[in-house]
Length: 244
Image (cartoon, helix red, strand yellow):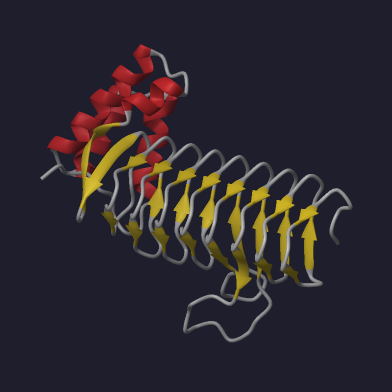
């Protein structure tokens, strides 16, 4: 179902099994295959490809989908593939800015208010949490996670999880410190930033497992540090934790 208010450009193909909510704009030459659900007030620029079969050898034609929230900007030539695995979805939240030529592969989960800069390539099963900033030409290994408020520098190669609040860059990526500018822009107080900076220095100078013990004892009631610790404890691929 396509809401009557949706604006559709020239030479656009939209499958029957696609739901588009009110206020969304679809640019020229865009193709959207279903199943797909696209929310309200999205701006989808020309030549975007959504809902194509995943580039995954495990995919066997099962019914999967793409789900996109509200108020996203999706620029030219972005590709967003549907998931692998019966009933699974590739999910993009709301208020994100996805710039030209970015690729979001099968089973990815993008949170809210995330910025993904031009030509970033995101492999399958990647999770990017709210407020993260990913610079241009970044390459991501499958199954990694990027935590909230993290910033990834341009042309970085990510093969492990990116800590919340952190600043990483390099090939392969290395931890450079705290995303202080990003935290200030999001309204973090100086006190919160000081605690996060101290925690990040602890992580950078010792074994991660030891750092978790130290931080648990030093910041027992700090919600930011508790989230940071839980992110580390849930990591399957390991975290980017050293600067060398």
